[in-house]
Image (cartoon, rainbow, N blue to C red; front, side, top):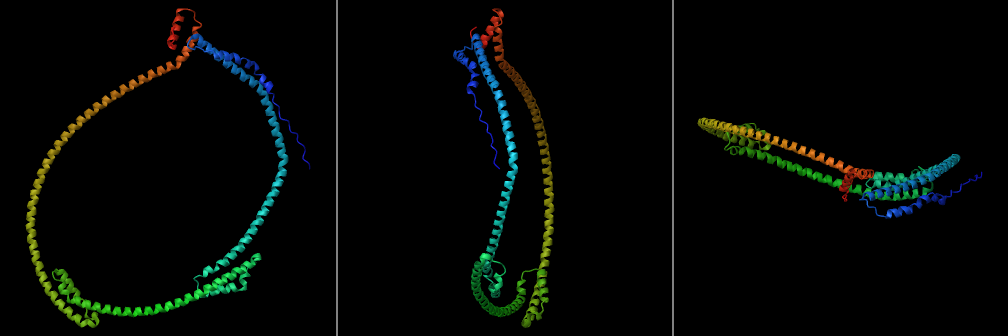
Length: 427
């Protein structure tokens, strides 16, 4: 179906000459304003100040008239533009309403085609990825058998060589690559098989050598254990023989413990050395009993001396304690008197400090109150001065304006004098 012809409106032609003609009467007065503004206004005099103010009012009136002329001319143009924008929006909305159903059909068909193309690409990519993953698995298979046993490598080779291995899936255009991958994997696995055989032969040889070495170590350990057993028995017999010499200088308790320990020894525990052990035990017990009697007598003498010394020391300690307690009592008395005097002096100093603190606080309070009063007075004066400064200009303008309505009287003279004093002019 042929598209209908659409009429496009011609652009609106502006009328600059007509619009600018609105400003001709106003612009005609600019020359007068320039000529009047070129003159210097002596605003310090009453007449000059008045003339300057009147000139400013003329300028303001000219600007206001210019703005009003433009607004009056532009208002119908704005309304006409709004009507045109509304009509444009109405036509565009109608065209979109006609266009949208057809555009949606076109977009839906394009979307269906895009989704169909994407799905086909996805299926093809998945098929290729599956083949490549299987090829990669075959290529990576020998890595799992780098350190495997002969039996495991042989089983893997047998599995790859069977016709069923490649027949598990349909390889399509990748059939030749699959056969090459299996051939490469088989070659690598056969190398692994030779390596596995060499490893297992070496391991068997090492195991035999280690077994022989373990047997030798066991025999040597047995001989060493026998040597250590005999040495321990001989060391025990020698220790029994030296028992008396090791207790020289010990007390009754330690000697008695050694005698009890020897009495508990049994000659049968010394195996082939029981005769030597029995003789050594009897000899050592005789010597230790003699040493025990001597130690008991010595300890009794020591106890007696210690008791005498303790009694003498107790007398000395009692005398020293009496003297110490007397000295401590005297020192406490002196300390109490000193503490009482120090407390009295401290109380006096505290009372004097408190009195001075109260006096200082009162003086500081008086100074703060006086400062606050001075500050309030200063703030009030500044506020009054500020109010005067803020109203000075207004009052002066009103005074100058009022002067024109006062005749040559005494009041007029006083007004002139006030204006002259404020502006700094001669009256």
